[in-house]
Length: 194
Image (tube, rainbow, N blue to C red):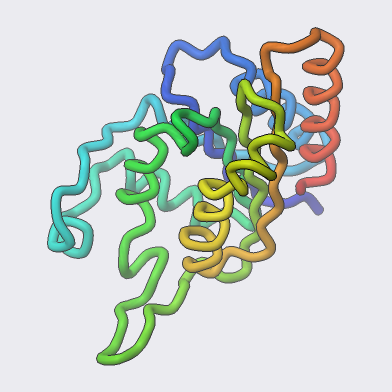
């Protein structure tokens, strides 16, 4: 029996055609062929107003597109998040998506006095796939992969998602053979549902 997978395409260009889109497509195609069920959330095509204060985050009703994304995430057993590194972090539209979708009552419980909020998305695993122009080892060693660690620990694991695996793809403008290798690797992950 296959897994239920929510694939979050975090590239901000709704026109598509980028390497991150090809990676997500390779994952989705292989996952579907292997018997997994995949629901795609294309963040660039969603209605995403910015949050302005904590009151909006806690009480303002989510848009219809955010509610659909929440249903896909609630349904899923595994999350796959694909995005390019922009200015050392995820693109603003993806961060805005997480702020909209991972609200109290859905992703985290209400914190009691003197207590931390509890993650509500337990029972789900995740894979983060991030692409970048610099070498992956440079991002890991010099920049200490700070934004990737933040997404993993401060967002996903805080909401109860575990384990969270990461795939860092550097030098995306490099050789065609390297790109083909990464497309194959993503297809393997998709077939495995991981």
